[in-house]
Amino acid sequence: MKKTTIGLVVGTRGFFPSSLAVSGRKDMIAKLEKSGYKVLIPSEDATNYGAVETLADAKVYARFFKDHDEEIQGIVVTLPNFGDEIGIVETLERSRLNVPVLVHAWDDKTSQMDMAHRRDAFCGKLSVCNNLYQRSIPFTNTTLHTCSIDSKEFEADLIRFNQICRVVSGLRGARLGAIGQRPNAFNTVRYSEKLLQDSGITVSTVDLSEIISTAQNWDDDKSQQDKLKEIDDYGPIIEGTPPEHVKRSANLSLAVEKWVEEMEIDASAIQCWDSIEKNYGCATCLSMSMMGEAGKPSACETDVMGALSMLALQLASGEPSGFLDWNNNYDDDRDSCINIHCSNYPKSFIGGEFEIGNLDILGASIGPEKCFGALKAQVKAGPMTYLRISTDDVKGTIKAYVGEGDFRDDPIDTAGGVALCHVDNLQGLMSYMCENGFEHHVAMNRSLSSDALKEALGKYMGWDVYQHKS
Image (cartoon, rainbow, N blue to C red; front, side):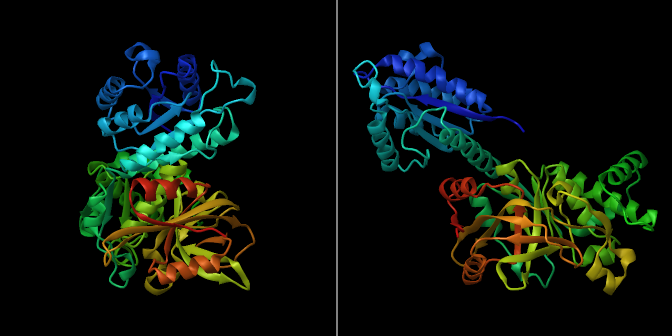
């Protein structure tokens, strides 16, 4: 995964020990780099002690950050002493980066409260945050008001902030692909392109007939053979599957991937159930699964908001996302349910054995010979985060819910891609979804990243986000 690039702001104040600013700058740079960040900061001799105090210092930092505005994904503000709140907020306001900001302050030690070592950052942080609030500059707080940079809490803060920065920078300017129109019966996948565009997210569209035509007329034998080998290496195909069914799926993958590459698409949603099966002769699941495994998530039934949800989860965790239905209760266990799709799950999302075969339900009605490409498995046990982003067109807002749970491995004897999910207070979540008009589709990911997603989507993207808790 590419390193997140951070701009570092070191605060200082004249009548506090400048040596703390010098050592704090050096130690924080080392800590951030060790934590996997790329750090950008003006040279130490660009300002007094390499820190920000005066308006002149703020201008130096702001110019530097503006020169690197296409690189910087977040800002870390650190207070080795009280710091000058005006200098810090002027830096952020003048740089106009509009990126996530983490505010950190250093601990004092009662054994070092003499004037040569006393920091007063505990107090200074309140002044910095007050001024950020006055100027409507959103920021992320550390878990502890002040802390050592080597504390486990701060290390967790850096991991979470990294996730926040990846999500925000990845969604702003994201390009989503709608391949085909929504199936007529699926009013649930309606959405507003204009609301997405207002958040910097662009939707490109293509008629399904264009993809089908490209697939039917694919004549590059080399790329076709390479894709067939890729499919063979990807997972086991059910015995007795005719080679022409696999070839049809390979050509579909090549056609979709060609359009995705040409349009620079970050995540896609494809019309399925049942147009492509009837008009082309295979399911889209395998193509979508392989794209998701390669970092290009793809959702079913032209659910563009589902694709966006998958992308946000992937940006937070660095892992592929699955796309599922909230589908069945689990007997009398009211904190568990069964989630199912046909499925298009990336193989690492499944986490265990699977096989590639035909759609079960649709295959029974239109014929299995038109339905090859579904990944069949039960999702392996482990932690998970779930997310659904939706446009509320009536209110003119984008909304989301997010939370955490886990996959269980109790066997479920049913068709498709199956996941047994446990969520504390599941009934409360279902009630919230019903009352607030959320869809039956949900994106899931093998990670615990709901805190970062709540912060990224709510505070920085400006969306209405509900984080489900027990």
